[in-house]
Length: 284
Image (cartoon, rainbow, N blue to C red; front, side, top):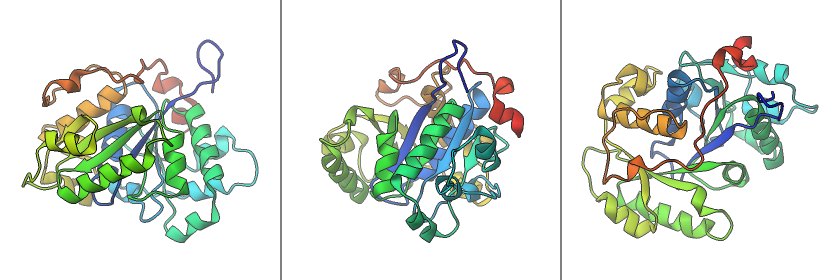
């Protein structure tokens, strides 16, 4: 796909990452993808790169026929037609490239093959969101390397904060930390640590905060993002605000925390591609 000036279109890649599992990475990835697709003119692809137990398809209640592994292991060149056949559309307007059902399938593909798929996707979509597992391996390293922005999800518990601080130490020197933005996710109604203590321990300022919401596991069980199932809830408003900020769209009603959420995201851009003109969307 080419932009209006004839140059190759290159979308933005956003990786949702965390130092451990169970901290809400998939929740954030699915909801942000749904927000951008539903509330802006941008085209969105959500790729499930969880090499352990990818849950994106389940969380969005879609039934994929093909997976990331199928495209990555394809022996020939990728084409827009072949790529579209592997995707499944969500009702929000986002497209999904699911993880393989069997985690062992990841062992048959390489990081280079995954990188090829992600880079191809960035030429087909305005935004490519990568959901990753709570570990660091070759696939995750690729997801970090190709990302324009990495959202580092951290819970407000001591173990999550410790692991996040260790992860930043591990990546320092091998990855540009200015691409990484901390998203605090309160997974429990009991707050054990203050946000400013997280910043002090990790050594980086938080970018966004998502409050605890008992409706999130309910909506997940129903296969619906909370931003569409309960859009007036506090968590939904914050996820909506995060998605719109990523896309550079007008801000929604959110709960600002200490004022720094109003900062402009340095890599957000205006969306010039209309969904009705997007070949991937029209093919659905």
